[in-house]
Length: 319
Ligand SMILES: Nc1ncnc2c1ncn2[C@@H]1O[C@H](COP(=O)(O)O)[C@@H](OP(=O)(O)O)[C@H]1O
Ligand SMILES: [Mg+2]
Ligand SMILES: [Mg+2]
Ligand SMILES: [Mg+2]
Image 1 (cartoon, rainbow, N blue to C red):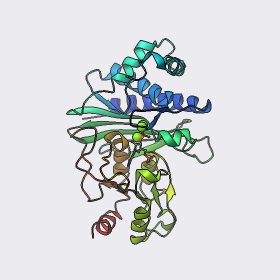
Image 2 (tube, rainbow, N blue to C red; image 1 turned 135 degrees about the vertical axis):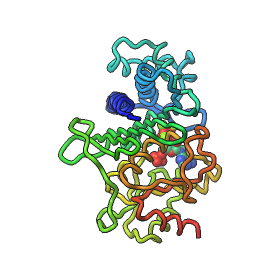
Image 3 (tube, protein in one colour; image 1 turned 60 degrees about the horizontal axis):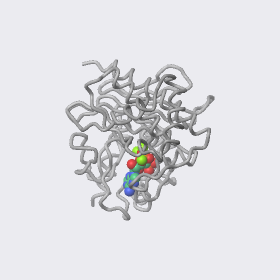
């Protein structure tokens, strides 16, 4: 079956959402604290609204498992935030109302199903707030297999152009990228083993989202001598998929040993890397499980590689 329509709709929605995020970021957004103490901004909400609306119009029967929900936004004391967010959404959808926007956001409260989308409206909210990297990440999953993935990275440097890159993949059709500023999709490939210049590794900026000392030791153990490149969000997957790094390590933080990864933090990035010729598993070499629920309870950590390095890195992690 062809996923042309899914790919097109997902790309268009992610590009609009990325535009909203860039507009919010120019105005220096404030962070709102979620119940789990993590930050969210009007851009996270606006991005989820725009993408859920697009999916509702084209694929009304598809559930969406999104990171955000509108419960807080509907509280009277959040009226200012809701209005601010509505203003940004109206720059893109002029006749949107506050009720519509909160309903669109709550379309992201769907469940993992035989066919569903998973959405991270801003992955790397901390990076977004720091004026660093972030990504809008959207993926379609069928029977536990990722079929389509789109990653919009509005702050990704682009040679000879303004920042912003879009990565996209369809199962069996390869991975591609194009500048958000415009242009044609170009095929991308992971780094080859003889390209020593790009044999570097990437990890999160946030020390608490991984185990940086072990990540660095493991990378060295497979022959990567350069210091890590620290990047927020699934932009790391885009970097591996386009051959700018060979490895992305995300080992469980010693501070949060019971943490489980969210499907929306990995689905879009994972298919982009796999279709670019790379490999994605957990730290034990097990495939990531997108069929159970929003948390990948059976998996620990995430290892992303150019494929060639994979067996080696899993071996050093487990001996
Ligand atoms: N203890 C932890 N271990 C791993 N990931 C964590 C974590 N706490 C939060 N995260 C996730 O890390 C994501 C950011 O990834 P990165 O560190 O690679 O930039 C966050 O996504 P959001 O920013 O969408 O909330 C959040 O879901
Ligand atoms: Mg978050
Ligand atoms: Mg995320
Ligand atoms: Mg997020």
